[in-house]
Image (cartoon, rainbow, N blue to C red; front, side, top):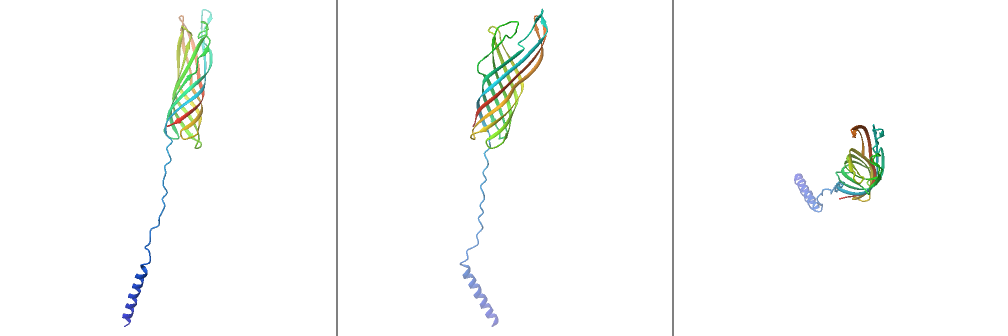
Length: 231
């Protein structure tokens, strides 16, 4: 009899649990919000720029020896300042490095004294230059960055004395330092100083069968301000 009562109680308990269980919702897995990962845009692309440059040309030439008692001087000191227009084209790989091509063109000619003091007369001189650079950059903030220019350049100096014309190229290592401010992701303004050419050489110049020891020291540098647009 005792076993029968226990069995009845067990059946009743199980029936009650089954009925009550019908009102219990099944356990749901918690919903976890996974934040969307948004990749920062890569600051890269082609850019073009147009600017103004204040260019300075300095040259010192000395010649030792003489012709029949006449001291030979080949325009020993020449200093000219040019207003230039500057064109830029570059590609920015990221916010830290770019490559850039620059071209400077003098706006107008500068009057110069005689190419050779023994000839006399006044001529004019025109100057243009170009260079290609690696451009390391450092982003100081989201809008302001500093940069350097390291590369190779050629400065061409052309003179015109009427019947006597000629040009001289100065090429070699070129460097510069500057800073840029970005108004938007595409438009920025920059200010920099660039040593376009700094060349020195010694040579022998033959005149009327006589050789002269000539020393030439030429420097070309420029301060530039430009507006660039990155595509």
